[in-house]
Image (tube, rainbow, N blue to C red):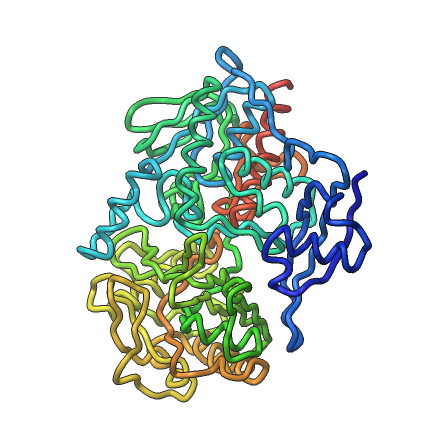
Amino acid sequence: MVQEYQIRVLPEQAANEDGIKAYLQDEKGISVKEITAVRVLKRSVDARQRTIFINLKVRVYINELPDDDEYQRVDYPNVSGCPEAVVVGAGPGGLFAALKLIELGVRPIVVERGKNVHDRRIDIAQISKNHVVDPESNFSFGEGGAGAFSDGKLYTRSKKRGNVDKILSVFCQHGANTNILADAHPHLGTDKLPTIIENMRNTIIRCGGEVHFETKMTGLIVENDCVVGIETPSGQFRGPVILATGHSARDVYRYLFKQGIEIEAKDIAVGVRLEHPSELIDQIQYHRREGKGQYLPTAEYSFVTQVGGRGVYSFCMCPGGTVVPAASGANQIVVNGMSNSQRNSPWSNSGMVVELHVEDLQKDLSLINLPPAPTNELTAIDSPLAMMEFQERLEYAAFLQGNRKQTAPAQRMAHFVNGKMSYDLPKTSYTPGIISTPMHFWMPDFISTRLQQGFKNFGKSSHGFLTNEALMIGVETRTSAPVRIIRDRETLQHVRLQGLFPCGEGAGYAGGIVSAGVDGERCAEMLAEYLKR
C-alpha cells in the first residue's frame, strides 16, 4: 500500500528517514516495521514562530517497494540526418532548447561565443587575480551562461508547473540531486552546476547534435524576410535560429538595432549587493541566538517595499554565498552573488535593487547625468537601447570609483542610510577587493534615496537587519535584460522575420534558470512546427 501525508515535524525529526518513520508511527499509527520507504515529495521551512517546523509532503510505502525513478526520464533519440536548427547561446535557454529539439527530431547546432564550462574557470580566476576581464569568457559568457556560476536557483514564479517539473527532471537526469524535486526553493550550487551542464552537452553530441565553442555570431542570414542561418568568423551555419544570447550580449542588441530588427527598451531594476554575516541572518530569520543550529539550512530572506512609486526589493538571495565580479567587458564594475551546494560561506548576500521604468529615464535627470562609458554611443533617450546605455553608464561610474580596476565601491549599510562615509570596511567575500566610497553621493538620487528608505523599512520589519555589520557592494545592474526582442505571442517568432525565435532571458522573456529553460523548450516546439510547415 502507498499513502501520501502532509506532516509538520521538528527539524531534527525531518533530518533523516528514521525520524520521519518514528513520527508516522506515533501520529499515524503505522508500524515502523511495515514502512519499507519514505519519499519526500515537498519540503519547506516554517520559521514564522518561535518553534520552527518543517512542512513535508511524504509518500509512504507500506509493505511495498518504492518505484525505481523519482522523476520522469526523457528519451533522447539520435537525430543524425534530421532537419537542422541553429541555437545561438549555450545558457539555460539554449541548452534546454537544444535538448527539446532532439526530443522532437530536429538536429541542433549550438553556437557559443565563450568557452566550455570548465575552461571558463581559468578566465574567471583572472578577474580576481589580475583584474582582467576576458570579454568572451567571464561570469556572463560561456557554456552554461550567467547561471553556471551562480547559486543555481531553480524556483520561479511561473504557474506552468508541468513545464517547471520537466525542467527539474531534466536536471536530475543529468546529475542533479533529486532533492530539487522536493525543496520549496531548490538550488544546485556553483560546485555542482558545471558537471551537470557538461552532461547536458554530452547528451546533445551523443544524439548527433553539434556544439561549437569560441564561435561568435556576427550576423543573421536573411532571405525574403526569413532567417535561414547565422554568420560567424569560422563560416555559416544554416537553419532556423533560436537566439538565446543572454542578458549581457550588448553587441547583439546593437547589431539588431542597426539592422532595423524590431526591439524595444525594457524595464529593469538596479542597485547593490548587500552582504551580511550569515550567522546574523540565521539569528534574525530563525528568531534565536543559536541561529540555524544542527538541523536547519542556512537562512534565506525576501524583502519588498514601495518607495516613491517604485518597488525596492531583495533579488537573487545567496545564503552562505559569495559576491562575485560579473563584468563582461572593460570599464565595468558589476557584482552578482553565488553559493555552493552546502551554502557554508561565512557570509550571506542578496541583490538590493530599485525598480526602474523606461519612462523614468526621461523624467529624472539624476539617471542620465552619469558620465558616459567609453562604449556608450549616446543614442536618443527614447531609443530601444536607452536602458542598456544607462546600465553601461552606471557600471562605468562604479568602475571609476574602484580606481579603474575590478575593485568594487563599498559602504557600510547604516552609514549609507545616514549619509555618512565608511572609514573602515568589514571583511568581505568579494575577492578582487573593495574600496570605501560614499555611494549615497555618486549613485543617482532616484536609486540611492529609494534604497535608503527601503533599508529603513526592512530594518523595522526585521530587527537587526539594518546594521553596520552589513556591507553594500556596487553595482548590481544585470537583474534582467534591458531590451526585449519583439516576437509574436503565438508562434514565438520575431514579429517580422520568419525563422527567428528570440529566446530566454536575453530576449526579454525569462528571469532565471528555470524560466529560461521553459522558454527554451517552448521555442523549440514552435521551431519544430515551423519546420513542418
